[in-house]
Every structure is written in C-alpha cells, then in structure tokens.
Image 1: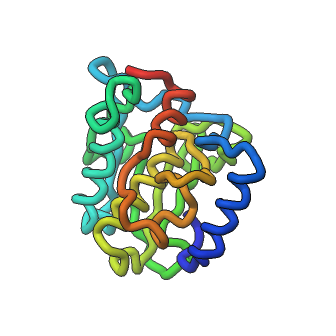
Image 2: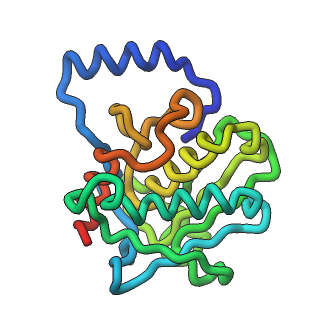
Length: 200
C-alpha cells in the first residue's frame, strides 16, 4: 500500500468499468512465495516480530494476525489456510517483522521482501523470499483503529504472497483510505493464500 491520497470515487468507477468489460481475477499473486511457508496449523509455526516503535500498534497487529489464522471460523472450512504464526521477542527467529518509520512517507505502510541475509532485497515478482518487512508510516496513528488494522492485515497479505487486487477485498491498494468496513481477509484473499500454500 503505497499512497495515502486516493481518488476513491474515480477508482470505484474504474473498477466498475473494468469488471464490466473484462474478466477480473478474484485475487492477484506475485507468482512467488515465502520459501518456508506460512506455518502449518497444528504442525509447524512461523514467527512474527514487532519492533519497538510499532509496539504502540500491538493490538491491531496481533488481531490482524489472529484474523488471518482464523479464516475458517469466519467463512467455513473451505476457507481454511495453513497460516500459523506466533509472536516472538527474538527478531532473528522472525519471518515477518513490523516496524514504524521515523519519517512521513507517501504511503501508510509498505512491505519489502528479502532472501537469505536480511540485507538482500528481492522483487516478489521475480523471486521467492525468506523474510518480509512491514514498515508503518510515522503518522500511521492518524488512521482510525479499523483502518490501521486493515492496513496491517493488507501488508501481511503481501508478505505471504498476495499482490494488489482489483476486487473489493483486503488487498485493494486503497484499503486504508476508502474502506472502513473491511478489516480482515475476505474470501477472495483467502482463496489466494490457498492457491499458494493449500489448506489446513
């Protein structure tokens, strides 16, 4: 999610036009994924880490992750995923880190992907990755609680392999600006995760 300012009405009209004239995918993928997966419910666990500056938003972060792990509770067993993450206080154990920027950026939150050492950046459209970094903007607190949770869950989707989607889902690029009612993965988002990692 890269832009704070978005023309919601124009985007909505564009989406209506596109969906009326083309077959729009329910979800979009990068074509690559976390090399070690997203855990396996009841079998293995991945870890996520919250940096000092981002701990102000621990409630939103932990709830967003809990929602990703509970999709079958919301939508039924067909929408189960193997997502299984646990919070760690040891950054080196983590496969997904959340930090807060010290400066104001042009985005509310941003994800970057890394392979091997945490200094080797990769393009998610060209390569698998072993670790994802989510950076919250310094003025992230200006968003409402629901929009903060949605933005964090959206970025978690990027770390797990979901790209921006054209449908009315969590992975819309303007989720933190235009949508107050979507705060967790929607069915299309879950189907995207299942297409990468399978179900439980």
